[in-house]
Each structure stands twice: as C-alpha cells, then as structure tokens.
Length: 377
Picture 1 (cartoon, rainbow, N blue to C red):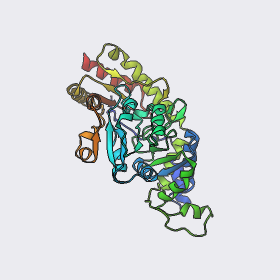
Picture 2: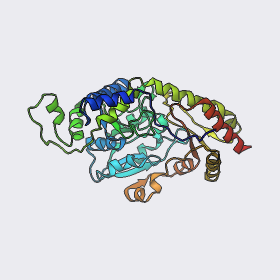
Picture 3: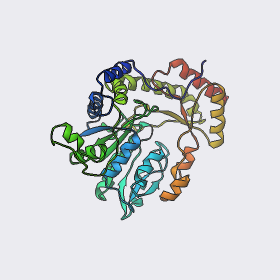
Picture 4: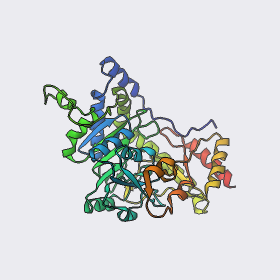
C-alpha cells in the first residue's frame, strides 16, 4: 500500500476551466463573476440573508468581531478546544476570552455551562461546531436572547452541515466559514461570513472593503466611494473563488463522497469500539454532519502517541488536533478558564484524526483499519 496522506485538497476537474476564464476576463481581484457565484451558492446552501467571501475563516471571524462592536474590556465566551483564530479575532478588539469546558461526546462547548460564565462584561458567545457537528444551538440562542448577547458561529468546519434542519452558520447573528486547503470545500486559502440580520449587510460590505462604500459605488448607488467606517482588506481573490466555485456548484458531489468514507470508518471500527478499546465519533440525532473529519479517542495520551507512531510506521499520516488554548501562553494572558477543566484537556489528549478527503478509496480505509486492529492485537 502506498503512503496515505492525512489530507488531499478537493479537485473535481472544472477548477482549471474556471481559472482560465478569470484570466481571460482580465479580472483576477475580488468581487468578479466567481466571487458573486460563490456568495450566491452559500446563500442557497445556508438560507442566510447574505454571504460574503473573505480571505480566510480568520478574516470572517475578525469581521464578525467588528460587526459585533467588540470593545476593550468586553468578555467573549467560547470553548478552549478550538483553533487560535477563534480567540484572536476578539483579542484583537481588546476583549478578554472566557473559556468554558466542552462536552465529552461531541467536543463542542457545553451549553449547560455557558450561563453561569456570563458576567456584566459579556458581549458575545462563540460556539464552535467541531467536526461539522452542530452545537446545541437552541439552548445557546435562548441564553443569548435572555442576556442580550450576540451569537457568532465558528462554522469553519461546518459548510453544508445542519442542526435541526438549519445550516450551521445561519443560526446565530453571524456565521464564519473556512475554505482552507484542509476543509471539505477549498480554495487553498479563503473563507466567508454569513450575515443573518438584514440590517447588518451594508456595514459588512463596508468593513470588507477597507471601510469604504465601494460596493455601493459599483452598484451605481453612489457616484463616488469614500472612507466611511473601520475595515480592512478582507476580499478574496477571484482566482481563489473560481477554484472554489467548481465545488460549490454542486456541493453534494464532495459531501456524498466524504460521507461514504466516514460511514465505512464507522462500520469497520465498530468492533474495536464495542470491545472498549476506543471510542468512535458521536453525532446527535438532530445533527446532519458533513464528514469533515473522522476521529477516534483512545485510552490516554501515551496510547495516542504509540498508535500515531504505529500508523506512521505503516505509511499512514494521522494526526492529533488542538492543544487547548487556555493552556497556552497567549491563552493565559488573554483569557480565563471558567470553572473546572473536566473534559477539555483530557479529551484533547486522547483524540486521533484519521485520513479523510474526497477521493479516499475503500481499500485505503480497509488498510488503515487493519493497521489499527493490528496495533490492538
């Protein structure tokens, strides 16, 4: 068996044709034909009022922090088990991060712990939909409504995934997607922000265009554009959007392929889980996930280290994931862990992500599972 990588960026075949069209049109900066097509595709998939392509998922989070009017001294509640961008976007605005423990089943923020972490300084809640499995959004939105808080969904891993029939990213005030090379749908680097309240759309366009009303100028709504607000250069290249649109045009092609691989892993690893040798992924009944990843949880850190080495020795590139932010130097400087860290660190030290990408073959999955079984023998 040849070496099996952890990830292979998606490629359907029409990406090159789209990119050539962009070059021939002499329009390679953002907001061209394919940027608009990507915006519309995301609006169609999610039902959101407005989708705007950005340079990255990080940029989408930074835009959301500006739109939420996060100021120095504000507090923002989120899980510690997430990527650094989730926290950075708000720290850049002067906020202090309040980390809350995760659920051991989904590894999402424990919705039952959020309310007690709220203080007079709390401004927003940032649920992170880990592995494309939705957080308990009904409870989170109810808490936010009662305490007059903003909900910003970090749905970087959640494109084309759903909670109770609603697309992840479309449920809170703002949703943030990533189209990084490792995501289900990819432009190499890229992201998008979903604006779910109509009154925020115009300001979002301004922030994305460096604080100018340039979008209104191109629509003919003003005869010249000028600087009207804070903002930055969050506009994704037309070349990136051309690559991405090949995948968003019919998102089910990639989605069905990844789900097929996910289901094979789940079926083939069940005997090991039934013996108590590992835990496999849990997806609540009210969530329709997008097979962003397949992970297993082993006994402890030591076993994870040994199993990863065993997989590597057999030319399988599997990885662990986040080191909890509250344990980092910056996390301790800019944040506080509220309550007890009962699950965040412990679960993070047990997790292994197995190779999963569009085009992964059945015989490759069978080989990976066989290697894992051999380890436990």
